[in-house]
Length: 295
Image 1: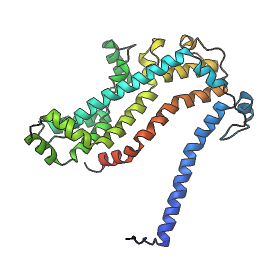
Image 2: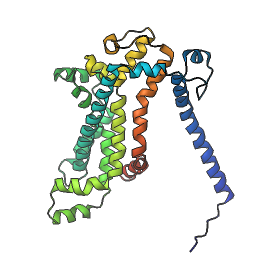
Image 3: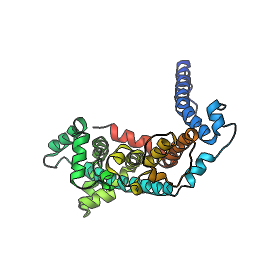
Image 4: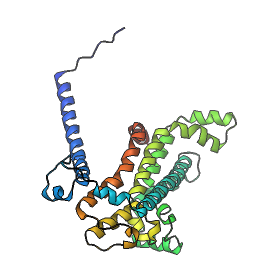
């Protein structure tokens, strides 16, 4: 049986058209600069200086990418970033979700005080110098733990995940307890499968944060063999433009043209996250809405 199409009013069609135009304009504003950067990274130096291209290159020159891909230290830095991102995301998600699960239980003694302490950390923090002194005092400098532990849990992410867990019917866990499940089994077999969209969303947030982390690496990592990709790319850009940087981390590279190499490193650092996003995109909107509707 065919369903009748609902006729839209003129005002509704105008509203939809305005939305399409507005969102299309915003998309172009975000997309055009990135296309320009890709084109610049693929263009020869002469085209960059004379600006003979806009969103697509007129001449293809892969010199910048050859410089990057022939570097042994690049592969090392990329591997470091993959390890930092993977382990950091796993640790952050594990601690955040377990904390959110515990704080979502009304029967927890001191629950209000603990939640207030979490919110307090969103408003006030010790600052950079006290944090550095704590990390240094615990002898975590020049280790990847200095990148994982100080920001392991985001209070904002934890609150949204806690809200998502609180929105689940309590009868599900009660039935599981009657069947013989303990709290860990309820958490693993009941709660986690039901909040997969939320988990995927915040795992992406953590992964992007660890991948793009730059400042903590500058503060705590002095050993060039432990540099993540962001520090390596920073050194490339600074050395190619005549600035001061750790030359030992990029010693296997020859002369790097400063203009197009800057664009190439931007593309190189951005593509892994862009490639990961489509796999969690279907969970993204749903996960954010589930975690923010109720409270």
